[in-house]
Structure formats: structure tokens, C-alpha cells
Image (cartoon, rainbow, N blue to C red):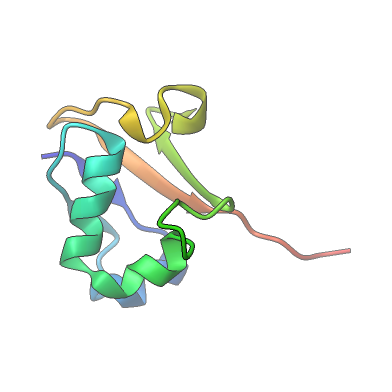
Length: 91
């Protein structure tokens, strides 16, 4: 099963888990499985149209999936997907 790494600000929605095992052969399917396990995450990751919010970045082996095949990027059972929301602020 692929593993999805959850950043600290979103861990309250995964019962405190920093990593979640997910099912799926693509990044999109893995993310769908994450939402099926933790439905409260949906509002933080997806917009009203069902698309991943622009500030949510997903990485597979240090590569942004937007530069690969997006949500159709294939994953294997050994893969680790990093979920990294953009941080704004400062001066």
C-alpha cells in the first residue's frame, strides 16, 4: 500500500496520524482513499468543484506530481506521497 505523509496542521483530521496507508494505483486514487478514511480532510484539500486546491502540493519521490502526470501519476505499494500545503504570510 502506498503511504501518504500528512503535515502537522492537518493531523487533527487524521486522528493525529502523520502517515496513512492508502489504496490506489494513482495519486488521485490514493487521495480519494485518504478522503474516504478521513472525510473531514475534503474541505482542506479540495475546492467546491472537486479539484485539489491550488495551494495543496503532492510530491512523489521529491517530484511535484504537477510536473509528472498530475493526479494520474502512477504509484506502487512501496511509494510514499508527501502532502505539502503552501504556507503564506510574512512581509
